[in-house]
Image (cartoon, rainbow, N blue to C red; front, side):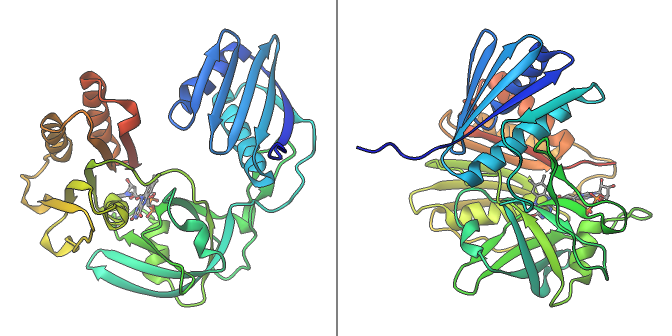
Length: 352
Ligand SMILES: Cc1cc2nc3c(=O)[nH]c(=O)nc-3n(C[C@H](O)[C@H](O)[C@H](O)COP(=O)(O)OP(=O)(O)OC[C@H]3O[C@@H](n4cnc5c(N)ncnc54)[C@H](O)[C@@H]3O)c2cc1C
């Protein structure tokens, strides 16, 4: 029997405090990978392969072992980006046994606007044609939308020698925002993204504005898909606001028939409700912000906590909304000791 081919790469990081860096890596990646820590070493394993990181003062020795060249590049970039993030303003040197072999990110998709329409007064759907739409089927739902400056040919990110992404700067600088692939129409080679229009007086909203002004033929980049895995469970409780509505609608639409789904969705008013479809049993409750007394905060998190309290320990709890509401729900889930593998809790935006 022949062993499956794997792709390997070694790296060396010289950080100011390697031990602290290893702690931070383990703490962070526990959300995304199986992390096994033994003293000064850690092995992170996911569908992308494994990263073996060992502290040999003053260095961190990194060994990557991945099932494909693509997975290897993505893992290297992820490790590099996180290490520099954790280092903050401290010096960090990161070198790899082989130079980055390509100039274009393997998960970058250049897509073109086909059409844009309002599905509700404040939700604008943009349909994109994508040469490789099947890459977005199943699995992860999220992308980073890269919006080039209007009127200039797009310059897409490449790689730095240390494995991090090299973003275009100056006149070619891209606007980057996180969005959810609402639906994939593989037959037509199309992807849909629903953009909430959230005008804030005196504040630029480049992500929302892109959708407002989108014209057929406009070109943008999508980095992904990555993160936001479709939950697999017999019972799912979803809580979110308009920014999470595309994800909630997609999870419901793709859930198998036996799934029991409860959703609590906060929107501004009845005009922002959308019909949700599912093969599963779907129970949706809409909350209307316009009915709350002026200055009210925390309604969604309070409703979420009540719903979680009456749910079984096996329920998959999926939460996405404003940062403070997510924090409150996360704290409650921790206190309740809800199984971490049955939780997705991410803030999608922050009130500023
Ligand atoms: C993983 C992930 C997936 C997401 N998927 C979607 C999606 O599919 N559709 C979608 O519409 N959004 C989605 N979001 C949220 C979206 O990324 C943010 O709302 C983002 O801030 C929008 O960028 P912007 O340029 O329009 O506004 P920004 O420039 O980021 O913010 C400008 C101002 O608007 C305020 N603001 C930002 N978002 C909101 C909001 N939702 N409601 C009210 N005020 C807001 C900010 O506080 C700030 O004051 C997702 C976020 C994440 C992390």
